[in-house]
Length: 355
Ligand code: 13P
Image: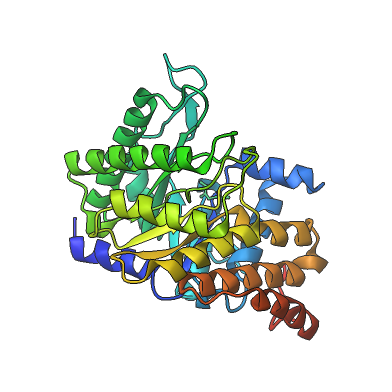
């Protein structure tokens, strides 16, 4: 493992004003999102959608890396160029999701453990050979009355440690994603308590498994109220609870924290990220984004599977990337949202690639 090159990749992913696009939905998840909007899901339509995002003119000003799914990283764009090369050409770093999903955890009702360690070394070698320089693994932790169990927290932390150590051995930066779900009626304090416990267990596992903290990124949830909690915490409360949780549990050697959006609306995710950065002051890590839905929702709902809507969909994605870029340096304001209408009215700089 070359620690210096891992560190430089990790730093590039959280370069000033930049964050990550998570476009690594499995075929099943993307199909569900397509079908909700009446878009038919085929290997070709999924390719067209991903290509639209990956070729958005100017997005590289705000996006440092894109996490792809196995199907996408093996696809070619309409010009015939492999999609990882389409990214590299723009200076965007290709990434890959390497877990194989959250499966029921034996002995722990309603809880899951994320699988995908078998054969992982070989898969990482193959992905690296086709351009991937970072990889993601998502563990899922659910809050309910008696949940999460410490068993669930520990087995998921252990798996994250094993995946991260294998990634670094293969010269790939691990993006370590322990997601505490928003679903539930719990208050923000409970989310903070569980997230803190999970991060503690994860960093214990990383230490035990000799993972270099300088050569990784952490992708946590923000500390928020449960989505069905009647008392929703304010933006300031979210920012201060999230920062406190990070300060207590994330070692200073970690170069960056890149949040998931977790089902927050796109603007709520941006507003929270901005408030966290405005409040953060001097802190050891960069604080940025690795959003999926919060970057893509409007773009997908605009595209609707039609080539004619490609340009408008790219504008929607570009706009959210720009707003989130501003939020990574605490410079977002509601006025930026209005620029979207102006940008749209002026038209975008270039069309989608032709088929
Ligand atoms: P969301 O931002 O939609 O939560 O997705 C991020 C992600 O990568 C989930 O694994």
